[in-house]
Image 1 (cartoon, rainbow, N blue to C red):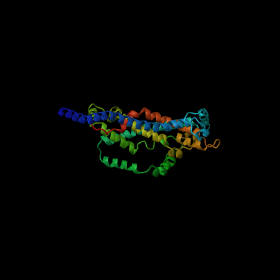
Image 2 (image 1 turned 120 degrees about the vertical axis):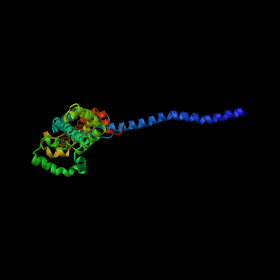
Image 3 (image 1 turned 90 degrees about the horizontal axis):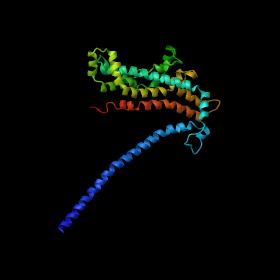
Image 4 (image 1 turned 180 degrees about the horizontal axis):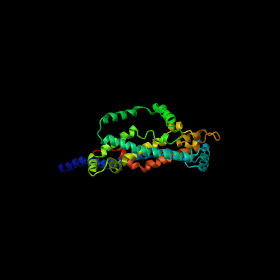
Length: 302
């Protein structure tokens, strides 16, 4: 009797342990299914607007506003493609945006990295005050300086209808210099620069041969943000570019809404928007890995 009661008691005590083990085996799987499901839903919600935009670019205005909506590509792509060229010089505007965006981004990365390197690695009188004054300019809205900027561009520099008006301003932005300074402080040791000086490198060789190759993640992250900002710029090009052949894509696409011959053509507008979105997607996909590395600098300190 005693043995039987002991066995029953042991089985009763072991039963919750078996259930706990089974539960612990299922928990990681259920957690993985839950989080992967959330990621799939997020990916779908992020990708669907782009798919929907490309689908609408293949349809006519009547098909776009019909109900129920059509989720498959239509047969109006070539017609929309022909119509867009009859309204605006699309590829010339596209080339304008590419040239301005690439040139502005390259110059911004050069000057911002040099400024950030100076603030991070050199000790000079008034460095902290100058850096604080530079950061204070970030609190001034860009719209507050639009009138002085336009007077400078039009009256003093005579850059109306010239690329310089959209390339030169902002190549040494406070945010870019701050971004590069923080990255350099976290990732570039002073001992590396001291060793280069002992070996006889002058300051420009140290920057371009040693420091710049180590800044690729920061270049990628900052470059994507600057390029997208330049590509999407609307008010600046609208003010200084007065010839249709000098328009950038955002300004040119605004003309598609008010074509006097056809009126509002939603298919043409969506095709132009889809073509204007492609370069940003390509740039982001090409630099995604370095972009994430640049964003997470300083998150883990070893």
